[in-house]
Image 1 (cartoon, helix red, strand yellow):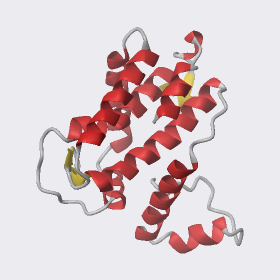
Image 2 (cartoon, helix red, strand yellow):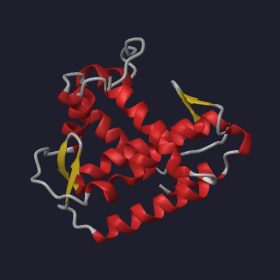
Image 3 (spheres, one colour):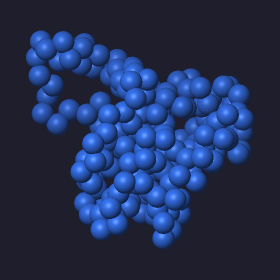
Length: 191
């Protein structure tokens, strides 16, 4: 998470309106990833019974929501206001609040998200994946070199592998990663 903040600190002033990812500019992309960072703060406020048992279930349920990509894009655009006139300072403050909140929560604390409730220990890998991928997206958009920490890459790749297995794509992904055959054009484990 701190690497993300470092990348955001390094965004040149004239790059915030630059293309970030898909239909987002850099500011909207940063707003999106900061929503992911803020998840443990926001979703720990209203405890409901846990109805998702793991991170893969969380992602699969989220991706099955109608118009999920349009909803995510809309929320990111609305969230740019939270970043104010100094997006880098706002991002740092959000990250600090999130880290402080996580330290205060028990592993089994329920995170009540719009798609259901999952324990913190199962929710955190989803946040790590979002931060890793979008830190690289932001860095690529603004021409900053970044190499996510190995531990964060382990969490991200493990979760992506778990999602692939649950979806029946584990063998295909394993064989592709082992160099036995290429992945289908445009393959995305989350799409």
